Image: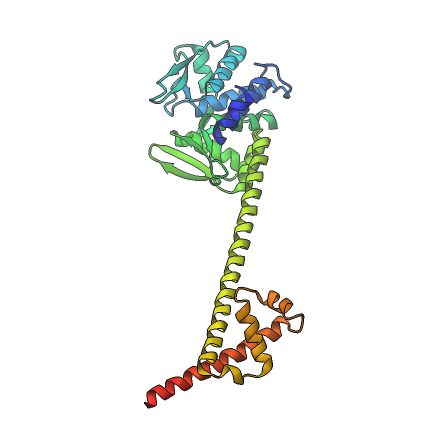
Length: 328
């Protein structure tokens, strides 16, 4: 798939496409500059897909919407187990489109392979030990490609693994907990879900399975979202301050009108009259602008002090008028 087409896909699809392309190179299926997997890591990857892309009833049918993933499995099956399997398209574009890879359960090699995937400790499935640290990372990548999905970080932070077999999912969860990877568990219809919502936890998980590029993309989205939130908060604050300033200016102009209407304005001290005229002539000016218009004679504190005096005098005039009306 061309890189231009990959960019147009959803975040989860892009991630899976690139992880599959990376894996194809690392298992020796294609020639790339990626570090080649050890045999044990390639087998660990295959085990994960067989466990989590297959059905919970241990069916030998592996299903996926990703044909590249099943092609890798077919390559590994013939390389390590001499088991031939073909990828078959099922469904249509309009109805449950996807792909499947079928293994013959009558083949003794297939039975030996499926029996080796995990073992039971009582009734609880347990994953078999991994040969090296790289095996665990390869296994997690295979599990995510088989049953995982991730929400576009521009819409929220959510990564989950879904499986119809609770035992298999619990076995994976137990092994992840041993390695400090914390998921929460839930149920959805006929499936069981392991999920995480913390952006930092998701970034760590993506890095672990080889999706460093997408972890960085997620960080960039988070930084951009925080920048936008800060701008919004700043703009909201500025609008709120402007609203308060306009309301305050309107109250002062209203007080001046009362003083003029009552004939009290001309008897005001000269300093208050000058301040009142300054406000009347510049109704939309801020306190800082009024200070500048005063020629630097007044400070914002001084202006506020005079405005409060004007508003008190206007309130007194209103009370006087109210009392006269009550007397009449």
